[in-house]
Structures are given as C-alpha cells and as structure tokens.
Image 1: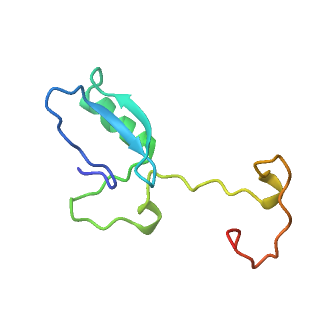
Image 2: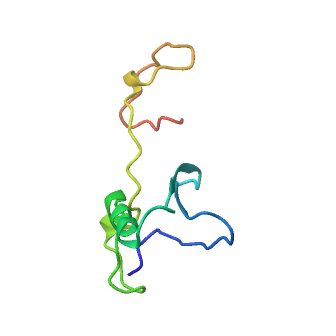
Length: 99
C-alpha cells in the first residue's frame, strides 16, 4: 500500500536509498536500502512516521497531512540570542517576530 508523502523514483544504476527532505525540499538524511529486505524497508518507513494509506486514493487524516515531518522547534525571544550574542528585546505578545 502507498504511503503519504513518500515518492519512489527508480534511478537506473543507482543504489537504492531513502532520501529524507524537509519542508523546503532540502536534504536531511540518506539511508541506504541495498542490504534491507522489503519487510525491513516497510518497517523503517513506518518507524519514521509515514502514514500508510489503505488505497492510493484514500483520504489522509488531518493529523498526518505533513507526516512524518515534525513541528519546527519554537524558541521564545529570551531563548534565541542575536548574532552578537545579546538577547533580543522583549516583544509585545501580539507582535509578529518578523515585524
């Protein structure tokens, strides 16, 4: 059965590997698959958090729409030092951090 957010590409002559990308399609990790069985690969995909659909056109529950991506860590202003090493000033609660 197909997994959501998992795309398979066959590259002639290339060793099989799982390439994990972030939300910007930047490479995070490459996992060689040459020495793994189909069952081991299926188990790996499940352990990584990919959602397995019952059928190719099955709906994916909302909580799995971005799976296996994890939420980006959120830093509070007092936890994120500026480039000069100083702590940035406190912001009003309703103020957007980029403004």
